[in-house]
Image (cartoon, rainbow, N blue to C red; front, side):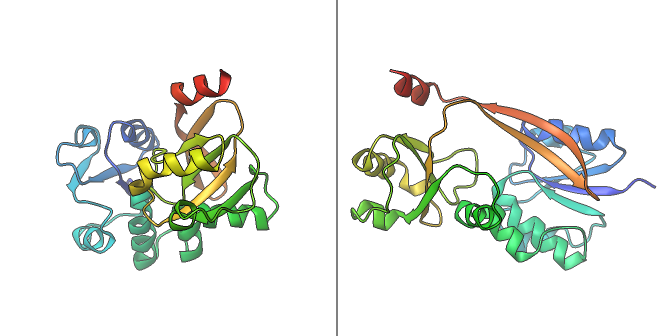
Length: 221
């Protein structure tokens, strides 16, 4: 009997991952807050539920049997990890959950363990807008929220602190937890891989590429 996996996320970008999981013999239940999400036509079963509400998602799935649960975006991580712990399914502990949700926690974890990562500093929206800047003089720099829900929301490049403050005022509503990562700018392309790891064996689900024409043209001028 095939095993069933719940996928939290049903937009167009989720569909290739869902199809890839189905190709490996799993039944897929897709969950999304959009009743007309594209995954409705791809998954074996669709559940209409806003997965950013972890408690409501757990209640909605209470009557369903499944063998695993996977989040396909940042807003789904808390629900997926919490439900996995409730059901004693494979998943993350609370520390890992925090590192996935917060770029500040994630970067601190990488630094503490000596993993390669761009140089960075940490601050908050309130401190930066008040002119209380961290010890940082490496420009241009990437300004990014610790948590915005993913999709590079609120991320921009600044040449100095004045430009950082001006840019932040335009996007500060996307900085959902008020924390900021100031990061070394590294010129090049950015690629995102969605990978499912089972017992140490990775399976590639999908690859996406990011481009920012505005920032690229500014930094090359």
